[in-house]
Image (cartoon, rainbow, N blue to C red; front, side):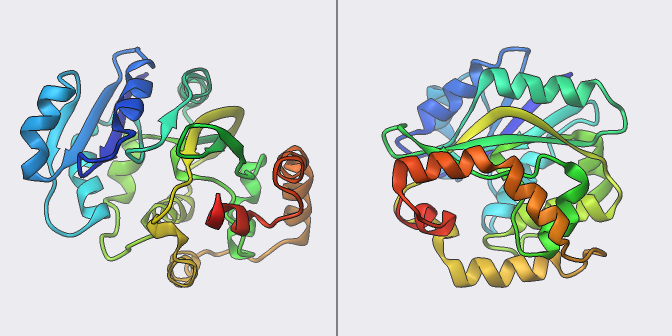
Length: 260
């Protein structure tokens, strides 16, 4: 299966080399599309000659990702990755193999580790191990998957359309919800697919704004919160919770996410 990774970047992230390097390490003819301002186009083309450089339009992050999405082919699998995060080669390949192995699956997601500015492990995000529980968990206010750890068929993107550029923070979630509502099959792989970097100044730490956009994104889900799904989620992530306690004490995920 052909692979493509989209990264929207201003071209100033001190971690961009690491991000691009992790994608290059995938091999398999993976394309990396960097969407950037016109002012960064020449510099990035020189720094990363193996990447495809696309000039971003006006309209914010999701408009930029749409410019990358326009480059996706139906026969490719793709993901979008922040310019300070990394993919994990073996886990990403496991996700690609799972996607290639079943025509009924349109989106595969896996585990996502957390790291600090220096790349040191901080823990892991809890994930739904049972894809059938995704809608119920979302309806119950639980985020059961993470954008860096997903891999989607290009044909799914053609089916559900572009990202909604009116979102500032939760356009990823809206995209997944739209795929669920369209009946796209999701599957989980128990492998670390990517690592998400916690750092100061991230937009996603604006909790009230995130909550508002979360509610808007899941409003159209034809699902109800399920206590059984919640307990399965907690049981399947017991190792994640134990690691968090061991590293950081008894803190909530939101606290760790806020402070790193």
